[in-house]
Amino acid sequence: MQHIRIGSRGSDLALWQANHVRKQLEELGCSVAITIIKTQGDLIQHLSFDKLEGKGFFTKEIEQALLDETIDLAVHSHKDLETNSPEGLSIACVSEREDPADLLLIAKNAVDENSKWQLKQNAIVGTSSARRKSQVVRFRKDVEIKDLRGNVPTRIQKLRDGDYDAILLAKAGVDRLQIDLSEFHVFAMDPTEFVPAPAQGVLALQIREKDKELFTVLQRMHYPEVQHRIAVERKVLNLMQGGCQLPLGVYCDENETVYVSHATNWEDGSDFYEYSTDGLENLAEIIVEDLQQSTKEEFE
View 1 (spheres, rainbow, N blue to C red):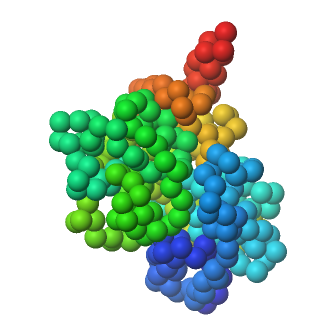
View 2 (view 1 turned 180 degrees about the vertical axis):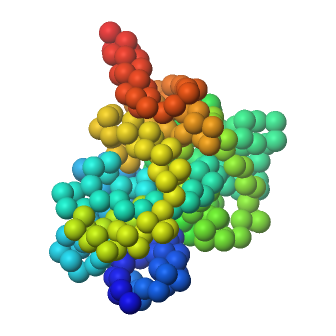
């Protein structure tokens, strides 16, 4: 029986994800232990993502533990990962995709059913994501955006405390934690309009490239059709040389229609693109060429 050491962040959601993978591995006959690792993103809570230096805020320390061989498997939210794995590491497996949509949680006293997203005029919306900020500005220029950090329960508590009229969260995380949202008005954003982060809703299982036995085990948990679609999303991100701080959303649906939201500066609002093709080959390059041309024209 193979023994596998999983490395995970310590948040409720990260531990849910690690335990979800642990159960799957145990069903395949493996013994599994989970090690909690603190990352830069966990330690620095007072800055928004666009103020932090570098990329991989929630992953670098875990990847280093893999390289140091103190763990064997890292379970990441795929959207947090840099698009190039460090030398010696690889993504061996991707999970099924949970609903990739963003949720707008609205305090009951801030609901206006006649307004876009059923959110009252001049509301204060919490998010630290440049992607989300740019799309809020695109649709609701009246809204005031206020930075929001912390894990999912912490963010929800800040809404409960009245610091915001509404906050934006990934639906997948809320669903996985089975959080009771009955005290709020919940509006699910349409991912073909309010575009998610590349690979949102998918887990990435990362290992050392040399661990061929573990790779073989993980293939029994792999979803190649999900990998096929998110590869386009992630390649656009890679070619745009972006990370968490880039105002970019890319979503490929099950019909292989690709939706893109992009901004040069989130304050200006995002531009929206839609691509329907007979196949995904070379589509990322076409999308990036369009985005770069649009940015070039903006500055001419």
